[in-house]
Length: 323
Image 1: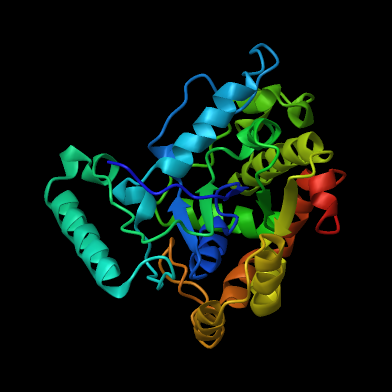
Image 2: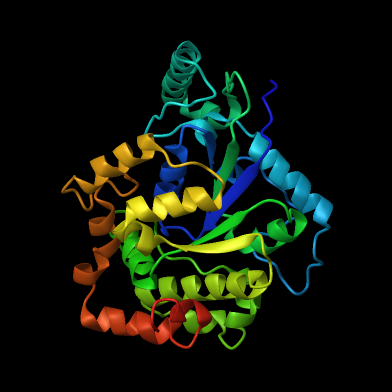
């Protein structure tokens, strides 16, 4: 199946539980964008390790460049389905209804035949009358691939999303408590990154979950910050700032990506800001952004906060939040 190409692409990347899905929904709410949700879950590239290792050679730029192009071309059901549905300027109403019907039919078939993994195998057409102004790829799996991606695609903007470490750690703890994840894993390759060089994996086995989550946050973000500091096409976005001032931050984000202000986005954010819901379903995004972002302040004890501060303190990533 062929898809209309886009003249411009951008990528937003962050660690899991950093608010990347909600930031993605803000970008998706703009009528001129095409948003792709985590296509690297489906589209794999074994030549690019998830976490670079000193023992593995740097991949050729051609590999990273081609892989990013494949991610931007992925239209699997899982990639294009979004809980929030937004009107698009490049797709007419009739085409939008047809496309939505295709998505709903594919989701029904996927629910009826789970082993078939139709969410990964069925491709959804864009049905666009013209290319979108900007195609946005979102990833959490590839946060430590960000430096390689950005070096290989110097004309493409990359946004590194960072959330307060207490917010990330609290969210991961909730995931374990709710059975969404068994634990907070620390993979072997993580310890090959410079910020973890003085820590042995065996030392971390007995750590509390919050410390493990904070350590994972610190190592990955510290390394990405160091590797991308001199790359002009990489910027960082603090999730907490967006959550506490969504209208202004969204407009600034659009301006950075050469997108005009969007009334549809303002209406979307008005609705979220007006809701009282701060938490709820673990993966929900339809909630008050400030309440969701700041829940950790009451959800963590003072000892918990001190443990996280001790873990990330002294790092450049931690310094972004006063540690």
